[in-house]
View 1 (cartoon, each protein chain N blue to C red):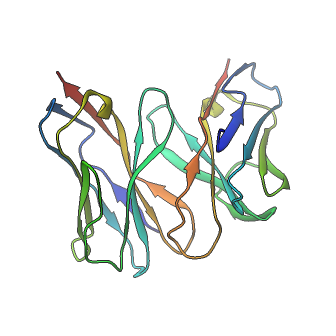
View 2 (cartoon, rainbow over the protein chains, first blue to last red; view 1 turned 45 degrees about the vertical axis):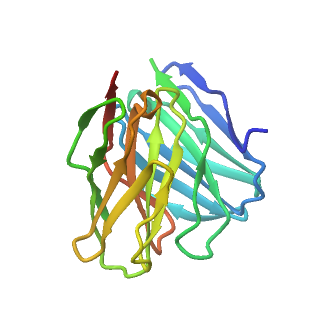
Length: 115
Length: 113
């Protein structure tokens, strides 16, 4: 009964390739997020969607494109992968925009390695 | 923009002892929430505790408690009776009106048996 799931958990690919990471939540949440954790463990927001609508786009290169087919899914597509894209990508979800206190629940992370 | 600072990159404690992890933040907002997340070697981000800024009472969750000093913009985490399973990276995080979590740099906690 995984609450927030991501696939794949590990992704190794060559520079220049295009890849996608999928995220699904079964918590009934309205808002989903993508965070990037770099090699120094620093976590930073990339995107947020509420009910399939983009609400946060945090100065991410346009090679990164999130797609939300429905409110339970938020996928991350990355074009023309670069070495610097190597990181752990976390999906998260929360109930919505009703106040700042919604706890965000995280998926297990996807470790992306670009060779 | 809000910032969160964890000034202790690494901490260690003897099993069964108490340890305090520090966190300070900067914001001009009055309504916000603060969180501590734990990231063990499994990589999973696990919520440890949360604090509402409008509440003066410090949050507690079993062996975990916080010391929230709003005026000083300080939010430290105290772990009592440390256990081997507490070994992990600990992240302090802020969430205000922008709805996104802003994280500190993390503190790696080692538990010595």
